[in-house]
Length: 490
Image (cartoon, rainbow, N blue to C red):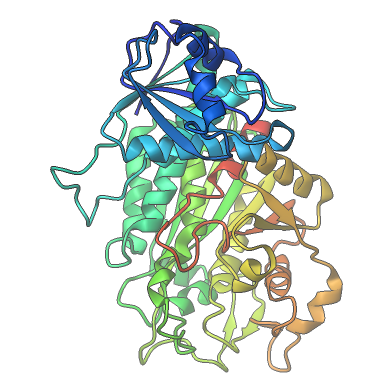
């Protein structure tokens, strides 16, 4: 979508659709007030009569309002001002985006960033309005092409702001590119988006940006590195596993990089510990961690942040066949630590442990893994927040603050040593599952054994990267959290 700035008075702008926001029982503000003045109080009268709803996230489309040049006016209800915050603001912008995507108009003038939100700046509100408009404008068409009579998504939007806010729009473009890349990868069917496709995506990014390079490790190369845990997960699949290494150089080579490691299980049948058939099709989303780190990497490259970033994707498909990993097998990871397999459906931690070991050769300043690791994360936090775990308080706080700023929130869970005994095995250094109790935490504890000496955090995005059981599909999260973290670090 094309974003531009335009300071023409909202009442004078000849636009297909003018978008404004209004609160309950509160005087009109900004462009909404100008519209009401231009139409001799008609807007306020429509609000008072109930023809225009001010309830949070309600939409009303007005046509031909006298005194206003716009063909249409889309009015977004913002609800009670005392309850309005950054999360509600983001939701209003997303609702506006979805409405416009599904309407006949293909352009609009946006004034939502004029809405006052405590503890936010004009810059932030403009950025978030643009990001959410673009996110909501997304429509999946790869295997379901648009029909000729379908409503067309927006192709352009102007924002009521002056040129000194251009940087906010540029930042929004970076966020939006990352989110949309992550959403698209997540939504693609697993017969298209397999490990090789993820590798092709990485190669595509390396061609777009001059300061991006890529390396793809094939199975024979991983075998030489003794990545037996990662390779065991893909043994039952005809699609070969890949280790994908993307490098972005925005600073001098001597500057330590941030390393993001993503779980890229492009389809998870559970292996021999086969999942139930109901909802198994949703296991194409099990590469949400990989999709989000690739998305954050692209956002970083698009904004040309002054930082060094390495994105590592452990890509595999978990399928059952005669060569598949078995419950009872003992694997030797790249680190030399042995793992007793009790459940082949706890495979994400197996690909990650070798990828985390491999990542340490880059001497990272920060090491973060991102994975749709456990259903227990969804039980704990639902779909509202990603789980964050770290033994480094300042890193955990930095990630939480980034999530709040991007309205892509995370919530910290403990990773105390008290949970480690649940991984004790009589046949190996550890088991790959720790039982029902604290399943998300014991998964994090497992990964912690492969990150000693690192400034490391684990993000379990099983609840945030897609909405279970619905038709919403991939959300693109936690691209916002990761991108904001990279901006803050840079």
